[in-house]
Each structure stands twice: as C-alpha cells, then as structure tokens.
Length: 297
Image 1 (tube, rainbow, N blue to C red):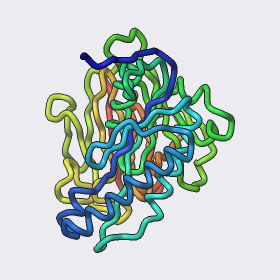
Image 2: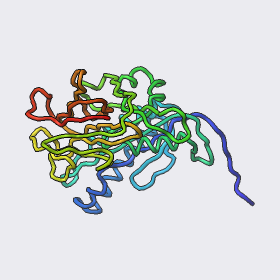
Image 3: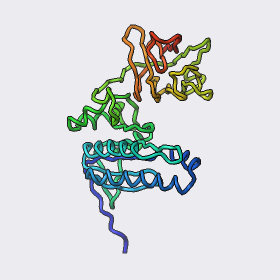
Image 4: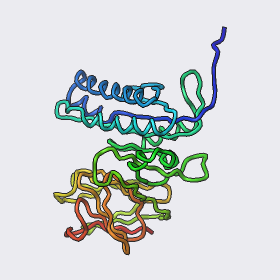
C-alpha cells in the first residue's frame, strides 16, 4: 500500500545555521576533541531553536535547518546561538563560530519537511553570512518586534532568480558594541561597470584582473597593506551584479570616504562603493600616511 503524503501551504520562517572553523579544528585538535566541540555547537543550536518555539527540520553534519512561526522566534534564536557559541571555551587554541541566515514567507509543508522559494532564499542568505554573522532580509526585519529591529542594519541588495526586485539584506547585531542599536543603511543604488584600485604604485582593475580582492596585512592578500592596524585579511571587495561591495572582516574597522561625503567606519558591515574615494584599514584617513584609492566607472 503506498505511503500517504500530507501537504499544505502556510507562512513561516526558515533558519539555517552552520558551524564555522570545523575543518581547521579537526586539523589542529584531532578528531575526538573537534567532534565533541562541534557536537556541542549543534546541540546548542537545537536547544535555542526549541526554546524559541522553532522546530528542527534536519541536521546535516554541522549544519542545522529549522522552521519558526515567524521572524521573531528565528531572530531571538539566532542571537542566542551566536552568543552561546561565542561563550564556548577554546579547544586546543582554536575557537569555533557560526553563520546564520533566515527568511520568512510562504512554505510548503510536507511530511515534516518544508519546501519552496522561502527555503531557497534562507539557504542563500546563510551562504552569504560570514563567521559570526546573522543575515536576513529587510522584509523580515520590517515585521520584527521593536526590540529586535533595533539590533538590525541594512547591508546591500542582491538579485534573486524569479523575482523582479532585488532583495535587500540586513544583519542582526548580537555583540554589545556602540553600533548595536543603530539601523544603518548602507545600500546605495548605483551602477558601476568597472572598479580601479590604486595603492603603493600598483593599480588593480576589477573585474578584468580578478573577481574579488582581499586587502590585508598577510602576504597572501591580493593587495598587501603592511600596517600594524591592518588585520591579516582585513576586508574584501566583491562584484555583485552591477555593484562593487566592500566587506569589513577586521578587528579595527575599515574607514571609507567617498569624495564629497563624510568618512564612515565599517565594523563587520558592507558598503557599496561609488564614485571616487579612499579606503583606509584600521584608522581614520586623517591619521593614515597613505590610503587605498578607488574609482567606480
């Protein structure tokens, strides 16, 4: 007798969370210690999901997929997960992190699983998140309760297959920083076909010479900035559709000045470059002996 399949459509919010640094931890700490630490993170994910009214759909390795009735539960669970993983002790000098993405909308519920565009977009947002980052959509943030909304800020917009309009992304801030209660819009509607980066007598053209450009102190960086304020892999410039997006990944922040505008500092934020300006790693432009100059054309 064939199995009976039950299916219905209802709104909900899908969250993906995965452990960052697991491969490196296996190499440095060995299989047994690494497996125990990663399993602890996954169990933390499950506990926080259940505690906020969510339901775990599946676990694949160090990744967890869950569904919530709405974005509020998903947001609270995501914040608790990041803080919980951050509070975990180091293992053999290594520390794990996590990346989280979630999105809400109509879902097809079938035999305990969920399907549809909402699931696909939530998975994509998780893939765009960096270690220690929570990424969601502006549509979800717009419907959040006020206290959660205060911890959010805009990032950038992405094109999504099958959708006429781009989807604007937001980040939920979970660390207690001076920026954590500011909804900062960094989305700029601008079109740029090419980007030139000039520093230390060298000029790099994007996208002709490279699709992404890492700036940092480490010798393996695409553009080496030999300064004590610069992190090893301080920031990265990527091309997304017709935009060039600068993403800060540093401890000291990335300072950006667009000609004619005031200087801004990015702390784990992203900014769409436009026009002509300067990028300084780890300190204000006025204090820097030299700066990276950019030209969007």
